[in-house]
Length: 208
Image (cartoon, rainbow, N blue to C red; front, side):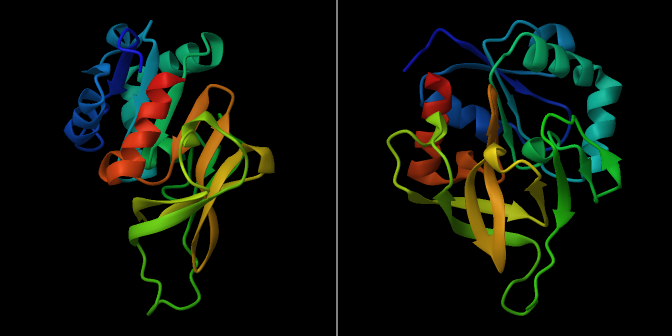
């Protein structure tokens, strides 16, 4: 596992980042938290976590100036990035949550769960669930076809390009739980809260 790559966890005021940082540190990663563009530019890898409202996340990223920095680092400099939960959703084109436009890195919409049986499938989707790998990805190195991860979300991403979906999960119906396009990765679940398989996935991202 590489210890040299400078990994930056982006702090834009949407969630507790300490648990994410702690998991990377446990894996001997050179990781730090940054909340200003100058501290993010030039990183070896980026992590975009987040919990909360999509439109608020967009607002905070833009007000901080991080929005433009992300586009430069990820799209121009091709820096690998991992979006977690809201961080993954912000990579989409649009979200129903606040009717807001996202980073538009994926041709995708973020929609609220439309479950048929609200007694058996309460929203938010909260707890452990499996993933079903749809295509190969370095994120799933040394992992089984089906692994369990911890989810907490009311909205999910609908990708219009099937090749962007790495893994699916099912909550009343299938939804994209892991996505990838080139150097851009996203997980709907929280790998930092997902015990052994989550730690393995973070280790895989470190090693990319």
